[in-house]
Length: 202
Image 1 (tube, rainbow, N blue to C red):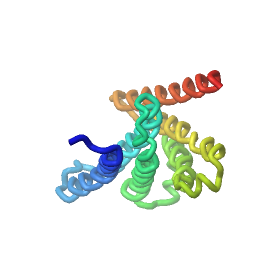
Image 2 (tube, helix red, strand yellow):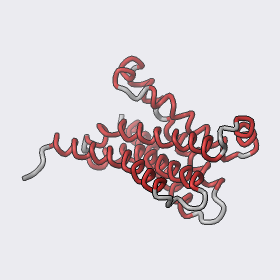
Image 3 (tube, one colour):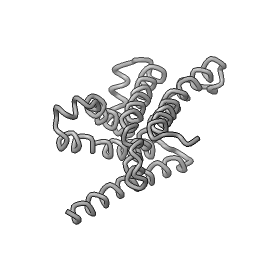
């Protein structure tokens, strides 16, 4: 029996929920089974960062997916996956501060001053804070759609800073860094082209 449109949207929302939450269970299992390698704290930092950045890119990709397919489920679940991306990237920063820097605030400040990739990553996360705080429907109505829409374009800036963060900290194998950079650049190019086409059509 074919699924109804409402059932398909529910199934997709559950899929997004799984994508956001199951990595936490997997990470907890790896930690409990002592399977995170010689430096488990560093492994947690990398795991949370990869997960968060992947979900952030997926959040951006939902818009062109909607443009190509016309399926409203992508737009309905976009806020959900965006909040999961913020959660994981916040966890990434907290894991770095706690498991890697041991909450040594003078040293953390020194690292942020001395290491450019730390500044890029911190800036990327800070840009997501107002997006997370204004992601709810009543906030969108209070701000007005135009102002809210312009504010949430910061996700592209955040993703670009995240790509630079990953690229600068990479030392040997640039495959993952290149993949993320190409994905972010492609999605940004699509957004610009789509806006130009829409403006010309009007």
